[in-house]
Image 1 (cartoon, rainbow, N blue to C red):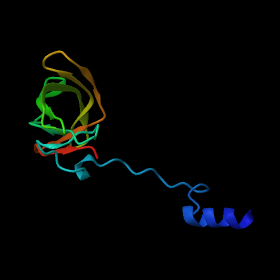
Image 2: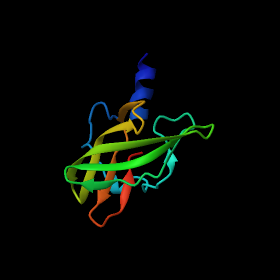
Image 3: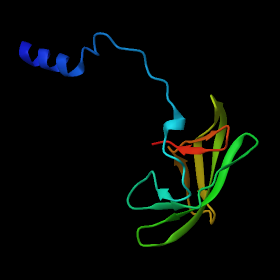
Amino acid sequence: MRRAFTLVAALLGGSLLAPGPLQAEDPASWPPLLPRFESTGGGGWMIDGYDPVVVGPVCRTDFAAISPEGQVFRNEVEFDAVPAPGGLMCENGRWRAKDGSGSGTTPLRVFIRADGARFRSP
């Protein structure tokens, strides 16, 4: 039992006993936001035409969700636009189908840097 504890403590580097400071999140280190990417829901779905813009207190964009079979579903998403160091964070995303057939939320966050560069949460 003692050997197992010693091994676990060595592997963790003592982090349970002496935690270091938490690193601040750096959204500018996230992958660039491209207009086409795999859906956060997975399953082979793709998102296309994703081009969020800031309109007052929100970020919004129309986009297409494309099924693995190639079916195209037209949607829109709106995020809260929150000031962040070096830019603006689009978070708390809410999407809805253009035809009214569905709606939901997304864990995706988008960081728009002050120079206009855009990044998506990993």
